[in-house]
Image (cartoon, rainbow, N blue to C red; front, side, top):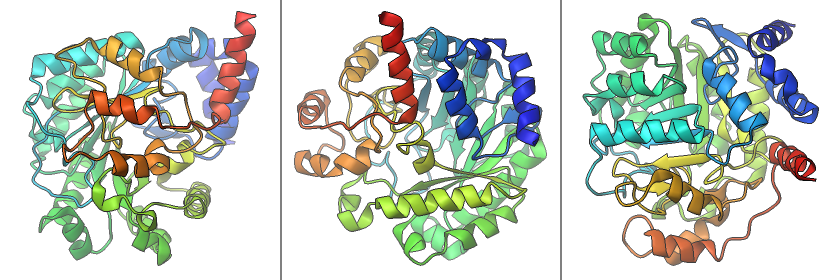
Length: 401
């Protein structure tokens, strides 16, 4: 019943929703039914990877992506630095090297993303708190986007947390992978990482006005030992708004192994755990594998998602070790357009499905350069789109006829 209250208010706040194809509206109703809409600091929040329902960014999503059907991405992430005090075993950014973008280049990229249709922007790294211009970047991005920060919490102070709130930060996810300090610290390659994360959560909560959550990489060992529920109980006790979960992705050579990649049965088990927890009061559980499942949005890498790393390389998403070019050499719109022609939406996670091809193409350069990326794409076989894009594309064809 609480969801119905917020949905009714959303129609009043976002009247363009009535103009959206009925089948897509029904899809959103079913999808949102897996979560409890919450009023988080005045934001009507489903979860941290959708703009709040009463946020101007959600209005832009309706207008530009559901009605105008712009060709650009709706979601993007930008790396603000490669510097990081931690050395995570599964870091997707570890092998991305080069000259970091300066602040003006980052701000220009933010503007270009907004012009292309981006309404949700994730700021990542490295450790983005190490970028001294972070608050300025957030303030510029928050003009039209729901902005989420991914951080280890390193170097966070009370003043910095308040500054980010004032700049317009919507959501923050602090990295925390286990309830035992020694295991988290080992995975993160830094003694004290666990304590740093807990301190950052408290500082962000005390700042107020920000949706505060944990970003957790769920390892195969935790899944196989049936420890995910125990971990979630620990997170629930922290008084956070959300637990964002993602399995370790095969973005690095160390994970190019079938035994390291999540199976479909394991993905579905995590989906069921998410749904069970979201029937309870308390924190939201937001599992990436649920969002990108075949009965929801599928994988949007290179289609409605784009990643620009700290050096300006343009990739389909943060987990794909490939680039289609650098924004210093070509316009972002040009690079995204070239990439999107090769990335129809799929109902499976792109890197989970195709990591073996990256293994075969690995040339010891960290990530595949544009030429190698194009060669690899010739070998990719995409599956059918997930339910959202099946409905979206069906309506698009009807309008053409």
